[in-house]
Image 1 (cartoon, rainbow, N blue to C red):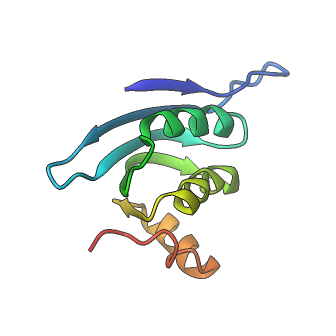
Image 2 (cartoon, rainbow, N blue to C red):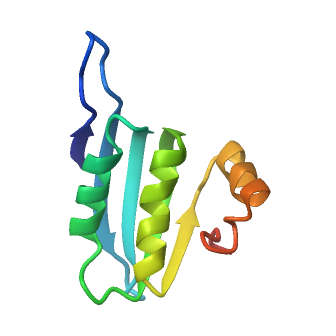
Length: 114
């Protein structure tokens, strides 16, 4: 799993995230996000996700089972991928994240796996 750290400034430790990826038998690329994603590391996470999302990918699954926190900048990372990949799904989102997706209307763009 690749470690993706946030910017450190004013003696504050930036968020720490981890990104891993693999392909499943059905051809889906799974990108596992773990740790915390916020404005301090969203650009670095975006870069790692872009590298994992192979050009021409048709189906991406974000496994969020180990994600402890995500803010709006982290959601923007997911949405950026959803704009360029035909099929994006979320696996194991927390109940809180699932509720945020429903309330904001993003559950249609970022559906969870059945």
